[in-house]
Length: 129
Length: 413
Ligand SMILES: Cc1cc2nc3c(=O)[nH]c(=O)nc-3n(C[C@H](O)[C@H](O)[C@H](O)COP(=O)(O)OP(=O)(O)OC[C@H]3O[C@@H](n4cnc5c(N)ncnc54)[C@H](O)[C@@H]3O)c2cc1C
View 1 (cartoon, chains in turn purple, yellow):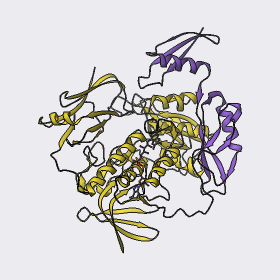
View 2 (view 1 turned 45 degrees about the vertical axis):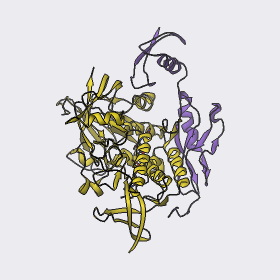
View 3 (view 1 turned 180 degrees about the horizontal axis):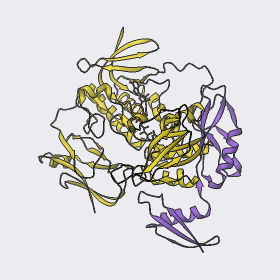
View 4 (view 1 turned 135 degrees about the vertical axis):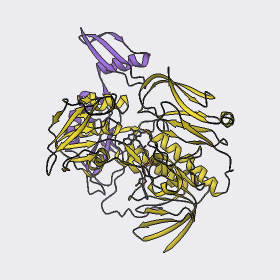
């Protein structure tokens, strides 16, 4: 029997939840004060999921980087692999906000999308109206 | 020197200023927004993590995405934006605003001003740590800008001082970029940031959090070579015999933000705890034509709150420009127990008031009481990392006006 201790992040209370596990099977969830806490704990001990935000190199852009994110949470265990992949990527300016840079990244069903616009180099920002 | 007139001038193009300028222009007033950087967005531009806009847009956006939405709204509103231009001075008598930019010095004469210059980071010097000043000590916001906008890493092995959200976010960011983050130190016995950030920025990557710890010395002549940390007592003083060494080339400081209010502090009066101007329910300072919103008033946690404040300030500034704000007797409010930040500090009984306050320590169950309970609200799991909001309706304000002294307090239950 294994015990996993978690801090619930579903609301500001921050309940300390204990999940008892027998191998991969959840035996009990205690310490939560609501059903959201139990759902969170069950997800965390089976497949914790995270949205990852980072940046990708831009060629010929007004900025050297474009910020990106996975458009859905991906399994937490894939984060190192995702970061490895991101390091090898580059994209040519201009980049649109929402542009898909990698479709179905690491077979997760999530896309890697740009979260800002990056114009082509030497565009004079100056005065906008 | 060229001089311009406008109804509403907004200073600063972060979330507060963008929302203020849109609201003022939508109200039909001629509006100019001035931003010193080459593009608007403010601190949002470098906050590439998700966690923005859950209240305003009902979806979780990253900082740049949130900024892009505000800019779209601004473009649609018809406000004019001048980027690459800084405000140097504001004359309280003539309301002349001196600005400088690539085309030289310009004076703008507005009927009303919204001040939305954001906050700056407390620097290393503020910590009064004696000894050398090697390269390798960065404020968290600067490190964030270097990593996220300029593709530069601050170092290879880092220690972070301060567990506010900015420190936690940077711990994760540096770790993901391959910097070895050896730990986060926090002076207080509880983490400064949101629980969610403690879990998702530190626990996820097994980055240790050392509560009740601070930095007592830094080492190195040219580049930082190490940091000495120690445990502190309840008063925050280092305990002898608890010192420990961290061999790091980088120290990241996340030790607080200070509202950027020097331009107006001279003539409007700053609140000693918020450190920004005293404002009323309409975000109006003590100069009747000057409104202020966002982190230049007090440091807010959520951009949604900041944007809502900006919108409200912009709307009221537009109304002031039309001579449409009645002068009423305001109700000053003061801090009772367990209240740190408090915004506003005066209630204008003519409009509903949204009170924002911060508690000094975590409490499981508590109650906010305003004016001996004329307004009250129960709180569950209140923490310094999350400001509390309480609405004071107009009818309640009328009751409060009858009291000699209106206190806001948080009573632990
Ligand atoms: C690292 C970090 C992480 C955060 N994470 C979150 C989060 O996850 N979720 C969330 O909701 N909120 C978060 N916040 C909070 C939120 O981003 C801020 O509260 C909000 O963006 C502040 O907006 P502002 O307009 O008050 O200030 P700023 O964004 O600082 O804007 C002020 C602007 O004024 C300009 N300016 C200043 N002085 C002058 C002058 N003299 N002349 C012309 N222009 C001037 C500046 O250049 C700047 O663009 C985070 C903040 C930080 C720093």
